[in-house]
Structure formats: structure tokens, C-alpha cells
Length: 110
Length: 116
Image 1: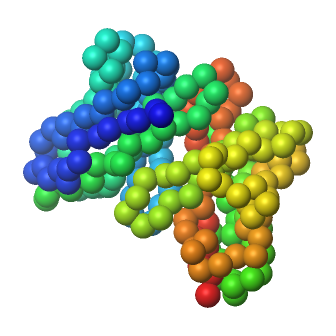
Image 2: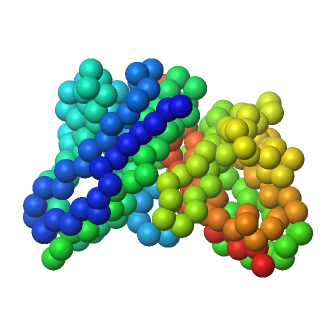
């Protein structure tokens, strides 16, 4: 079974701080990894994807992938109240299916 | 780009009736779409993979005769919940993969189904 585990949270950070989200996966066949943001009552929105080991930066977001450790993380710099949401980590396989983690709820305190 | 729409956004139906939900890729063609279900405070559960021009493949435990999927064109997939019951009340979300060679799935806005 393809499992994706996320740090359970909830995570509360002050405005302007760095929010750090972690995710581990059990399927070594997973080739692609995704971070989605989901606001309450809304559908997930893709914010980052990463396929190769190392870091990938996009604005205030940095995704990190370590395939040897089966570990994916997301850093949100200069956190804003609008970043308050549930963040879903997902691992993808060659059949294009995604396995989602349970999600981590982030609250940014103004 | 990569915009996916769903219709309706909300639907309330009586127990025993059927409900059809449409999922459209607006600015790209999608040979593969996915249907998910999400219960309150839970993560997404994949129900089925919808393939244009062929039968959908269902995840274990999902009744294919209850959740009918039709992928009639490269921009449209439909999910019909047949003989709906209150336990089918959920948030149904579709996703699609643009044919650009990547694996990124883009989600529709979701359909909230309430069966009374």
C-alpha cells in the first residue's frame, strides 16, 4: 500500500515566520511529489511539485525532496494570514495516481 | 492555464434519485481524469480513474454500478451517483492532467452533494 505520512499538526506560526511542513512516503517507486493547499470548503490547489532530489523554490515556497530518506518537505517563508489552510502532501506513481497524506493544518497568527 | 471546472457546485437530492456531476478541462485536453471523494476533516480518497474512450478503472471498494463514469471527450468526464443515499453525501472533486508530459493534477472546484 502506498502510504504518505505528514506531521500531524496543527501548526501555528506568527506572521512573517517560516512554516515547515514534513512528509514521508513508503513507496520507493514514487517519482513525483506534490504540495497542495486546501482552504476550508474548497478543493485542493497545486502550489508546488518536485521530481528530483534537492530544493525547488517558487516565490515564498521551497520544496525539498530526499529520495534516499523518502522525505519531502515544504517551507513557507514570510508566512501570511492568507497562508492559513490545510496543506496536503501527495506522492505520484507511473500510473498518474496520487496518494495523499492526511494533511497539516497551518494557522498564521497576525 | 490548466483550469478545471465542475458543475454543479452544490446539489441536494432525495434518497433514491440519481445525480450527475460534470467535470470539464477548459483550456487543455485531458485523456485522463480522476474522481475523488472527501468527507469532512478527512483527506481525499481516489474513487476512479476516468480514461477517454475506455472504461473507467475503480479503486477497491468503490461500486462501479453505483458510481457511473463516462469520459465522452477529451474535455469532459461525468460522474453519476445512482440511487443516492444519505451516506453518499460528500464533497466530490475531479482532477485532470494536462498532456504536457508532467504528472501534475489540477483539481476542479468540487461538488458538494447532500442526499436527504
